[in-house]
View: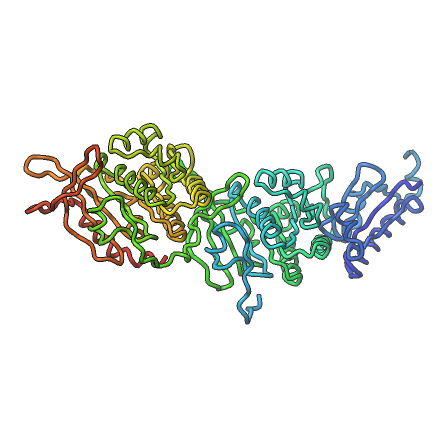
Length: 102
Length: 501
């Protein structure tokens, strides 16, 4: 069971789509490596999934776990801001920072 | 925007009266912006655009909502008589729910586009084979995504995608005030080819809803504001119904006015499809003339409707009986339908719609309306004008012979407001006047105008007794009887060019 689950919606194989996926992966690898799952949905292939989650803009990331759900719209070009929006721990360059956290 | 080399086809909306003012309908396979203030009827309009598509043209539709929940929209539709749920089950109507998710905040980090929205609309349109798409309302999108320039660009792409899909679309936008910019943030610019404006103006303590075609890709349409009303179980009804169907009267058949002398004054009676106005001060004999008009119609086997906005049914029957006319018997025989209403019970637009319904249902050959001036009380100047134009064209279109009364404000004559409005549309005008003659007040009648016919222009004296109205000899050696009517006659002559509206 992963501590973090993300669902990323993108539209087609565009630079922006790749940018968003790369940024999200980098964010997870640096902060919650091994603790996350990531699902990427292309709305051109699965418009019904966009319908279910009421997605308008792409890229959109939904943080499914932990609750509450959080949505972040955009290609996450500002990693710091994205980390804050998803409430991800900051353990870069301080491997022991995890100690004391649940 | 690339100028189209061909004239775009029109897609009839099916909304009553609207396609006539748009000269056929919305530009087909194009987006049209529908702008209006809060409460101006944008969502009703959008719902009805899809509903009429399904009901009348078998054209499925997609409704994209950015604001209201689908639950609320289904409910709103039900109150207008639209079974949205049923159409959804049949696959004729699909919602794309883009309303905000209440429990979640949208945070924006980096750049984005509306690719998902376009994908969802395309998916829904493909699934249903949609011909019509509504987006309601774009203002809500601006509220959610803070950067107006990004939103504008993205909405431009959405509009382009709608064009590419070949659907006829309606995009609603809010405007902050009735007579300012079309929309708050210049949303209309990207589809500025076609813009409709809804207004809901408070004027002299009366609400007045209007629709205006602001622009249409440089294509022809009727200009100006047109009154509309929102009717339960029916939706939007635009008032001057099929103005262009108004043709110069075609019937050469004559029907009796209900008075033999008046018939001969009009050289044989009224034309079958004419609208005739009787104008006179209070108590001069207008109601009597309408009673004789419908009684004569019923006697010759015609179906008649008498709409009274002045008197109660009992009063009306009693008065008619005192002139020897049994309206009650005619009604029981199914020849006559009498409707008595106080003007104040409804708005002018609603009166119009219910009068139209009665006439469509009973399909009379004759209609008498007593009295237009009573309706003036509940209206503003512009409102009564549109009402009269709409009513007259509706009556003529159905080839109904109609007699409409109007009260002059002064006892000895002068034009009334309604008179000057209807003068251009009326085929005939009959004036009833009090005349001071040898120290006595007498009554006079003159046929001031009778389109397409030679008529007697003398002012004849008439009397009223328990057998009705009796027209006698002309007044001799008297002038100025018509009082202020010189200005009215002048108006009648000038009036002919405004009938080309």
